[in-house]
Image (tube, rainbow, N blue to C red):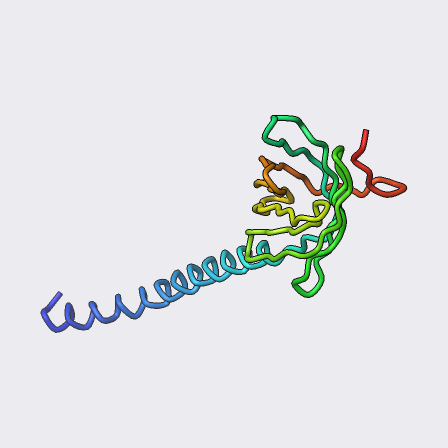
Length: 150
């Protein structure tokens, strides 16, 4: 192969390889876009539903908890039914997976601060001087209403 043929062959190889490089780049961009879409879809998952689980207080008592939670236009409402009483949800907020639920704890405001992961709310609760961990899982609502009292 003469020198002039080598100079022509190199650009020819580039033109053949360019479509493959472009195809690989486009495929990589599609994967990145899908990953971002999946991430934002999970962050937008509705909190509305029934949650069952347990909480512990400072005395390490296990408290059964059932929450009927409604999220509408960024506003949280509902009821917390527990083995220690029933408490109306008075407000709260959500920022991504971070959830704050405020409830009337018999005159004072109680708070549940949790993270939403795979239909689970895991975090802590406080009311007055008491508080502890809370672990709830989204479940089907029981027939006849939710009551956590035993």
